[in-house]
Length: 143
Image (tube, rainbow, N blue to C red; front, top):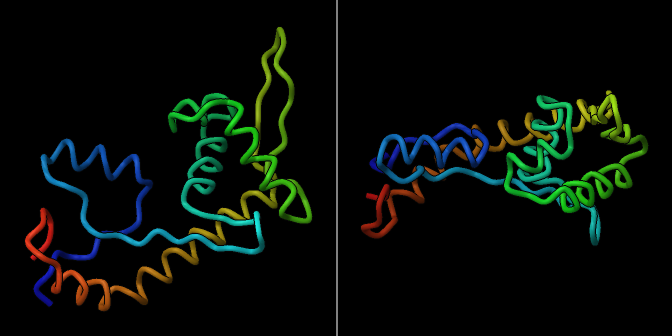
């Protein structure tokens, strides 16, 4: 197929940073949102937040890295914790020793399953994404 090559899934902030460094726009990619109910959903933003909480051990730091307020990060974690049978994140209040946040085993499993679903969907849709790219008008990154 003649369109741009398929780009593997990476966090959206990393794609933007790579594009700036290479002075070209990011290539087409899939963004998967799984809707479980009226307000219960899991998507790339929540997955990224969970990854950053896991890496930093802090809800505030994870939110800051994403350009998100602590309140918004707290709300998203609250939504995730209410969605699943067991909490995905536990936290301790700040103080002299500092607070923190950690992914629970459920949180790690939710994140693992979501990322696996994303990867499988990307692999399965690779040929169709290339075909769509072949039909693009003359736009940066298009044919």
